[in-house]
Length: 349
Image (cartoon, rainbow, N blue to C red; front, side, top):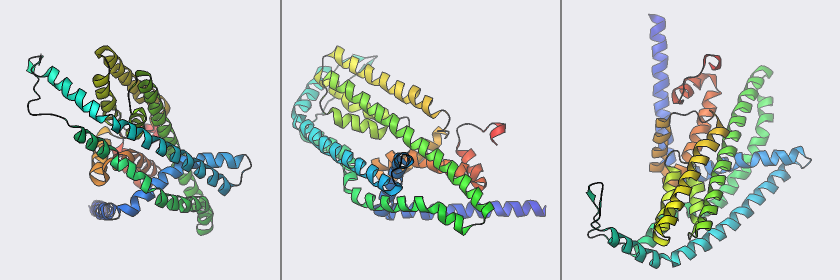
């Protein structure tokens, strides 16, 4: 009985300490967003850049010049895409009066029609060009504010690179050989898992964005770069992200194309989503994204409440990274199992 009481007391203390830690963490995320958000983005970018830098290093380029080269390449690509995206958005906004007129005409056409026993009514509802413009700007407002974070992100990225590359040596000097070996194994497993997820997820999201762009260009949908960028970003949001990204181009298709072409556009976008979201992503990831769907939705909703659209984009990568870390530390592995979608097999336990 005494041993049971001691174990129960230890678990209660662990839960209470965890609750206190989570409370402090949430308060810090709310009040320290200007500092924490660029840091998390910098960590995410580091995981994207590290494989390329080490690939160059394996071929004779010194490590830190290799990092400088990949960072410069990413910054140049980001600048070019940002300028292109700004031009595409400006061009799309110029056509908003036409889209507003066509939308009101479509609503008037369907007014009073009956489908499956339901009568469609848009009474008292009209869409002005100013409303559409405000909606588009608000949709991309938070995403475009990402540009203003880049300077802070760059500073954090430099220090993260320095820390990540010098930390193993400091661990080797700070701990005995047996502890150092265990830490080395844990850090290697964590690093491999995180690198794999970030690289594959970004590649899948980028591929989905490129295919979306090809479809929209072929069908003559304006603002194709806006919608393909939105597809790329929202692909990080589970279950609903890619479906939400389909809505703007689908609506434009029904406004600007004939009914047959519009239906073809929607079918192509849905087929693209199924191929990339269900087949290709599952094929690449296998079981690595082993997180309960309920947990993913709760995490996404929480981060949307916390940081808006940017929080939704970062939520799942951070959840996967945290789960990989928890699963590679013996003391926290039970928490990782509780967050999993499937129970581990006997040989994995």
